[in-house]
Length: 158
Image 1 (tube, rainbow, N blue to C red):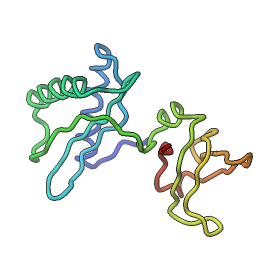
Image 2: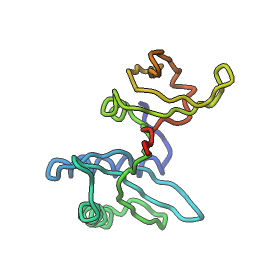
Image 3: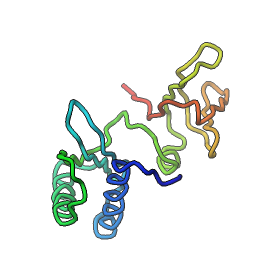
Image 4: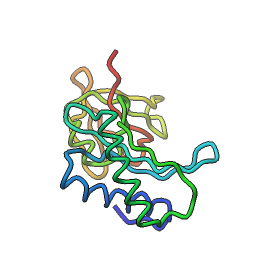
């Protein structure tokens, strides 16, 4: 993946690099890091998880460590709110490592452009490469172009 020139994406990348260093001393997984504007306010969000699920105390501990580091480094001039949280049940699968981890599980996929009048697909994630994602539903395999996928997430099972 090419490095982005967006300063906001660079804030997220630099924060993710720090979190990778923290992983050496703490047992957690980085799901995603983003720097986004919502309702007129900037948010630096890190979605983290761990075996058995991440708890409030784990998030608070990570938040303190990240906050202290951000105060020392002071590389984000915008006013922002730091959030460290669980990715939640309906988490999007954005990176190859997400697809590897969730291979064999049921996913929901929404497309940008319909294929035969269908924009939403669900099935068991069977594999992927840099150009496509393969799911299986009722014994039928469907290969979808990654460039046409607007969103892929774990299926919510109620």
